[in-house]
Amino acid sequence: MKVTENAVVVIDYTLKDNDGEVIDSSEGAGPLAFLHGAGNIIPGLEDALLGKEAGDEVQASIEPKDAYGERVEDMKQEVPKELFGGIDKIEVGMQFQSETDAGPVMVTVVEMGEEMITVDGNHPLAGVHLNFDVTVREVREASEEELEHGHVHGEGGHHH
Ligand code: ZN
Image (tube, rainbow, N blue to C red; front, top):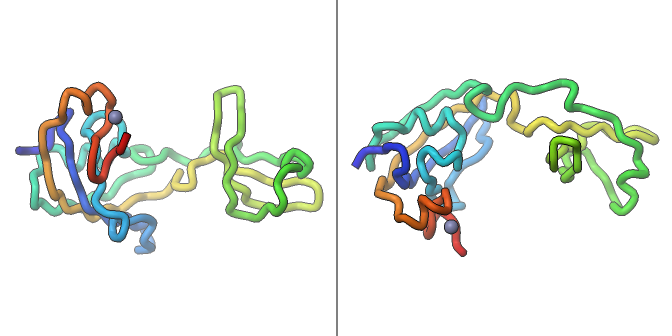
């Protein structure tokens, strides 16, 4: 069958940025299974896979707006070091969950000062143009339970 809304799609993929650096890959981790149209993966990749079927190879070049969004500079802020009091060693690149008015946000430490630490609330892939090489392994109907849960069960999906 072809990929449609609410189909279960199983893919192998390699994701590269515009410099050809591999950002992520299913190699090693095993194929990824997602429920099409449920927001399990970025919208740009869902669009690129619509109408494809098992065995198809798809190359998709996705703008930030259809992936993790553009970078927003004012999501960067300096916070006093003592707020991280409970943590032994803080390094650039570490990620923390931070409570904000808009709910929990994942922030990344981008700069260490004497007394202040700069954190960035942008998604690490915000503003990055994503280039996917995808092989479609399987397309199947979702079960009632999968549709209800909004995700795929079994290999490459959720186990619970
Ligand atoms: Zn479930």
